[in-house]
Image (cartoon, rainbow, N blue to C red; front, side, top):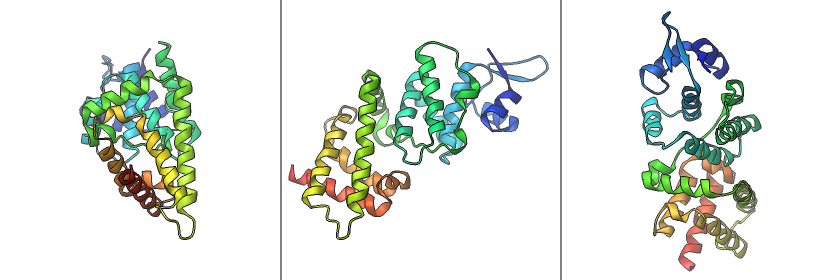
Length: 248
């Protein structure tokens, strides 16, 4: 099944001119060009466009998006990483999550996804791809493999624990005279570190450096800081993690 450039532009909320530009850059190449010069797109092209829109919505440059796209192994693996990170965004919209889940589930069943559903809710998507940039392609591949081996129930439990951690950190950091060395903060820090240990295989042996690096990321990136009520809360989390690691 194929869609014309006008159909895809309308469904994805973009323009034919933008799609042609993406094609010229090699980001989203049409599956064929008709005798009349019109461009047509198949399922593979739509999947690439979905990934481009996810990254573009973050303000990433097209050259950086091209690097990320070229470093991704397969369609299904890329979508699973996108879905995982989307679930971590506090301000995510339900329509955005349903769109990615629909595409992933359809691919797993080897069925034909509907373009109308694939692009539902992409106008406000916020997403950040950090793994490969910060820890390398090997780390990306290991995390990919780890995530794919989880059952759906295990994935839901993993993300539910993250949401609970974020809520508890935000509450604790917002208290008057909040102390990252307090017993409650250190219990939460140990719980946070235990949650991170599930992904330790992707970063090799230096787990402590991995945790400290994430703490810095929580503070420096406002999208992560928002999970803890802002930069002040993120600093609280980072300091509590540092204290806990030193005490271990």
